[in-house]
Amino acid sequence: MEQARKDALRELARKIRMGIIEATHAAKSGHPGGSLSITDVLTYLYFEEMNIDPAAPQMADRDRFVLSKGHCAPALYATLANRGFFPVEELTTLRKLGSRLQGHPDMTLTPGVDMSAGSLGLGISSAAGMALAAKIDGKDYRVYTAVGDGESEEGQVWEACMFAAHYKLDNFCVVIDWNGLQIDGPVAEVMNPTPHDEKLKAFGFHVISIDGHDFDQIETAFNEAKTVKGKPTAIIAKTVKGKGVSFMENKTNWHGTAPNDEQYAAAIAELKA
Image 1 (tube, rainbow, N blue to C red):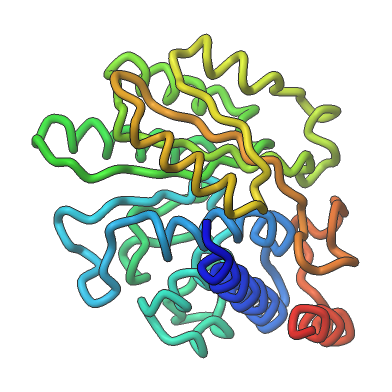
Image 2: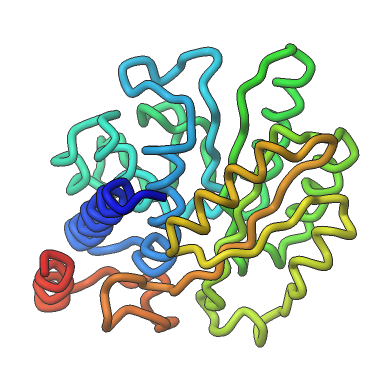
């Protein structure tokens, strides 16, 4: 990837991370840690990869994205806002009564949200169904979903993977956000779902492992996924929970804790710098 495009993506990711902090601080609740870890992947998807149009969010042939780890809605909302689906200023209405930006994505409220999500495992299942629908309808749009590493402890995730491989959904791409932490502690200690690569290959996936904060690797992975025929692709993205805010990085307690005023000021100052 040429340097100018990489720099532009990094700047967009910085703005999206600021939006995550703005939103969770204003709401006094939410999930900043996992939102910050998936930011770079979402930045690439929405600004480089997917065929979408903010002026026509229900465009029939658009690519679809489902945030299966729906509690990380602040990342999706900040990405959509910066992509032009709704005003960035609306991010501070997160989780407020009457807001279009509820604690988990709601496809009936928020422009650009392709599927409501929240209960872990349902998002990847819905996304796999969308990919099959595209095949049945003879459409060439692609479907992407982001699954949390803790979420991958859910049996339904693996049922969805079995489904995707059985129907040879080569228009389907799953991103595993592997930041290593979930609400109760290290994923490997709570209920170890690894090795993801070997399991996904056994389920019939083409598997790619990357640094989920390296835009060169992110681009290479999504480009490779588009060349795969006859099977779905899984991208295992090694990430850092709380990425971009030093005092949040690799800290379990930032899974579902909003920054207070002092922490908000420190996080925004660091991101601005």
